[in-house]
Length: 142
Image (cartoon, rainbow, N blue to C red; front, side, top):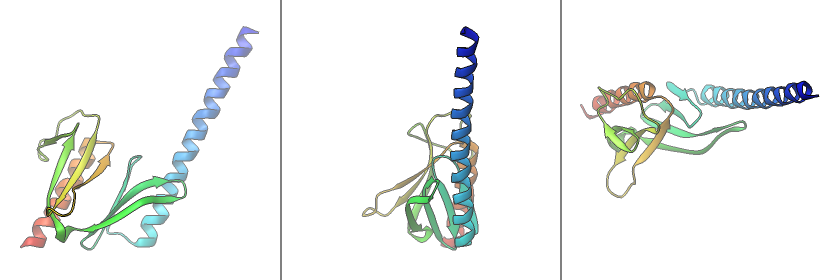
């Protein structure tokens, strides 16, 4: 009887993990459709946020199984600076730390508009996007 309980608990854990995997797969497929329909130049997906660039506009939101929610768009023309934030501290985008729990790219605007933080799961990915968008921002100002 004890071994039956162990196997039953393992089966329940497996079913739970399979459900989580299916949920994440649905989010990725919804993101793929969203990015393809809008024909973005560059886009990224992770569990915290989706981010995409089309022309000078950046669109970001939260991925769900049914699509992107809380979506907002802003123009790179309005951005004054792009910063890499790790654990609520500004870090050098060229020399990012190897560890951190809370990672985001922060877009600062003129005073009337509050800054926007787009969350990332990985520091290297956030740094790569930060460098790319900073180069785009520099080319806009030339």
